[in-house]
Length: 223
Image (cartoon, rainbow, N blue to C red; front, top):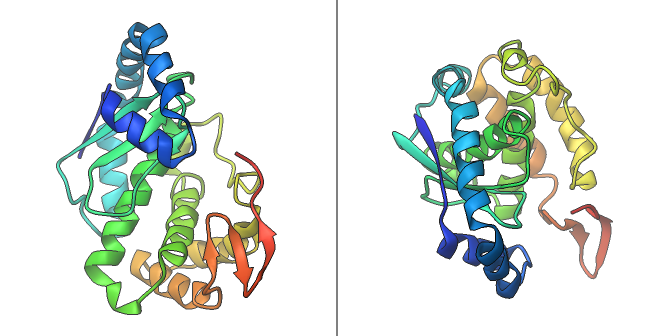
């Protein structure tokens, strides 16, 4: 797998609107800062190239599943911190205002999300998870694979914490339970199967929170 960083204004506008960022804001950012997006793209690429091959092999080894695409693209976003759509895609997004070394872990997180989605759709779709349930498991798997193994310490040694202080506090309880599942897994498919069993107890989970009829009793608040 090879990850390339690109500037892709049309897609950035589209995704940014999905994330609640007005088109006018994104357009203005491209008018004033395009040359800096291009510079960021090159800095990110240089940093990522230093770990790309190792990371690619690591994910295949840990998950037991090959990357679906030989090439993935990450477009530099004017306003979106990170985005990885659930679907047949090789495209992710990352914000442009980050340190090119610090950005590695979250970029890896976004790549793992779409890899997990592909694993589910190709091997576990009969489980009939909701999009929210699948998203939750993918997020938790990405936190695990970017924090809980020895390999990752050489790629972002300044940030190997299993992060629970994130945008989705309603996932923390499940995340901590899944940490133990990950550490005791026979293999990744064992981890996936146990995760599916756990997440089915939360049929109304989504990125917004965990809802019951007419009530949101847990809700993420950070952005």
